[in-house]
Image 1 (spheres, rainbow, N blue to C red):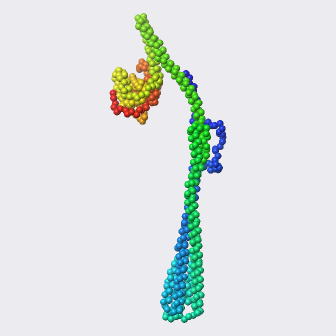
Image 2 (image 1 turned 180 degrees about the vertical axis):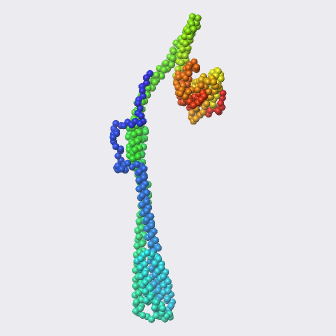
Image 3 (image 1 turned 60 degrees about the vertical axis):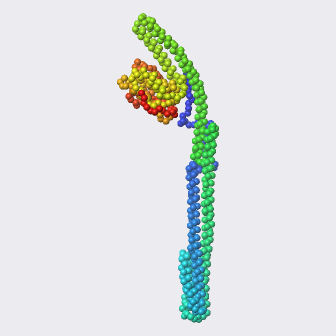
Length: 550
């Protein structure tokens, strides 16, 4: 019976079908949400790299500015603490030392008492220390150094012109008063005071400037570090907003569209937004959706055709069932009648028939008998997986023992020795598995080599969830070029006169193994003899202890 041919399915390399409203010549999707043409081609990695570089550059600039502010603040503070303030203090001490000198000289001039020279001498020592301290504190300040030089020069001039004559006068009596000298001394000392005042004013101005600079740099420092702090606090928020708008939101939209498509809404287009790689992913998902629409359309057509084919197969199976019934009943009866009447004719008219007639009758009886055997073999082959399909646990050890017992006469005639590994318990149809073991062992006994003793071994090994079996014999073997042919029904490698049978045993074995979900093959590398391997699904029941048995 003819069966409708399946629909042609598009190959995976074929271009996916497009929607009727889809413009195949349209350019790539333009950047969305106002992005420029150039930034619209940016990928997620490029956006992240640019954002990180900009953030690092901004932080670097602010860090450098903060370092400069700290350095500048330290310099101004050092100038204020180590130079301006100590210089002003030393200037005040210098002024005090000069005043002490002037007071001591004036007392000595009035009284002639040498005790008044002690403040003068102490003032000289203080002047020396204060001058050294002041000069060290001034550093590279040329104007203050010039002020100091002027003060010291006027102090030396005052002492040289007006102090030494008084100090060198004899002790014990007052120095004669000289109004002109006193006025000149006062004028000289006033000019010294003026130089001191100028020096201190300059130092105070310098100190005030340093304090103002320090306050300004402190304000700048506060602003810089506040900006850095605000930027550091705002940077995660900006990163989150950027990731949210640029990556997370497009991915969430893509995920929503993909979920709707996954739940069956295949007509919903997938939105393409965000960076270039996310848009590319969305386009790929949408292309996959369109391909799924095409595949579903094809599947619906194929399902319709498969339903039609299933209906045709059901009719064919019904007709095959009817044929099997006819073959097992109606065809058997004429064959039996032909064979019976031929035998009856041979017995009744044996004396009237010559040798050739008896030979013809023998051919007719043999043909009818072989036809019956072929019909029975066909019925057995068709029943595999159809009539015997009762799944249960099967102990292969018991199956092996029953098979050896049923083949005991043939085994004894062949003087064969049969051994086996520990055989497992499987799930399957007991009748079919018995036929499998019986056909494999029967073939090993049948196709023996008269030149060497016959040894047959049934091996069993579990690998994961599968049992691997092998039937190895020392018989005539199977040529590698016939490894596939022996499993085809009615394919014989030898004449019927050499080895009996219809060539259906291994075909039945193949059908039984494949019905149970396994595979069967001939090992082309085994010699001498033949080795047929097959697999069956494992049942999680421990096998017996391995002990080869005869």
